[in-house]
Length: 271
Image 1 (cartoon, rainbow, N blue to C red):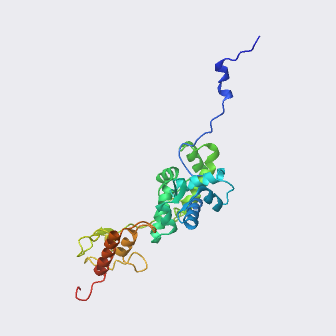
Image 2 (cartoon, rainbow, N blue to C red):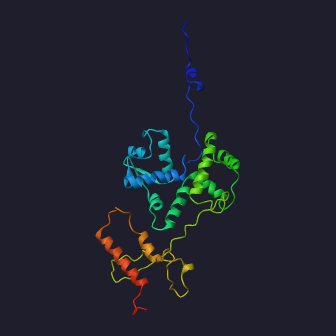
Image 3 (spheres, rainbow, N blue to C red):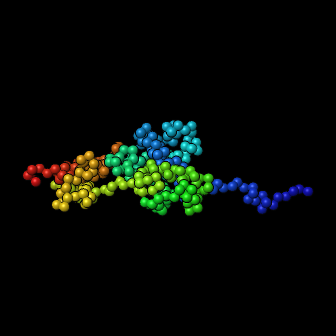
């Protein structure tokens, strides 16, 4: 007599492949510095763009199918340092601010954005902002129980979180106290006096109010290295190198720059 197998028995859970457990919140498997290194290679060797094969070679991986390679690329994307465009990798504006900042504060703020751009890290920071962190075992319990990180990823996730926080400057007040670094704040915008009606009239920046003199003047040299904040503000508005910039826009920028110089450095008869 032939043996028959019921459909219910054939499709029983015991005969199906188990689904790999997933963490309840997204997080990278490499730390911030590892992600920055990926962006650095794309920026330095590729001029801002690289194919998957090029990047694998630069990172010394045997193949673009390497699991470690793919995980590292995913980490750089978690931190918002690279994007995929038309099948190639390109560095983001955030990465450019870290790798080639106009001012030191640009790099600090970009690392803050990268660290807190990771959902898991942002939630941990929000819970302990300015306060002391629990010991490692406490963080592991938090990651597992509150943030639903799968058990075999809890310890690596805690380690990557701690390393990334240190690399972004969050432990300046102690190894157990999570404090956001100070990157300063962008000065206020003012209008630029200009005789040219087509000139840019809203790109000049003045120092924050607490750094201006009560008489409305002030040197405005708080931007660093004796450079006036208004000039720094103009530099911040420059497009990225290699960007298309029309002749008209260049002229408006230069007109604004001249007006700013005249405003900061008045001639004797103006004074």
